[in-house]
Length: 193
Image (cartoon, rainbow, N blue to C red):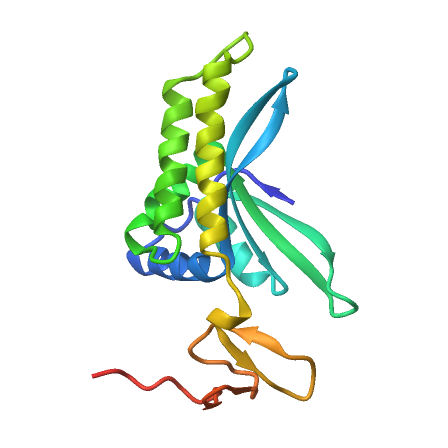
């Protein structure tokens, strides 16, 4: 499903952007992906969020536009949804969320730098020169390194145990009654004084 521009009926608030940044920090990804155009390599800024619950992704569409795809089925548990934005639309969203991002801030800054670079160095009607390809590839490689350095791993998150298979939980509050390494994790979070 495609939704072109964000819904204009309601302006997003600071709280909406803070929510979106927190959700994106935990569930989203920022990349510079390779694309083939006119028999030459090129690259494109892309941001994505995958979820089994579609509701938060619909909210992203309302706030930022973009597209939601059903990417696959979750082993009989229902569909997995993916929301995506590319190029200028992706940069626009990153600009709005940048003040609130923490985990993905460095990648967001690099993505914005890349989008600015290709906007300023736009090439029309000809192939990229080897140096133009190399400059774009350097951005791609740096983003790849950042994504590898900051890859989520079960060791970095609380490992939860339930009657079913072991899963990772990087939330402060798991609402599914699972037991985390330090005890039950389904109680309301305590405020820190």
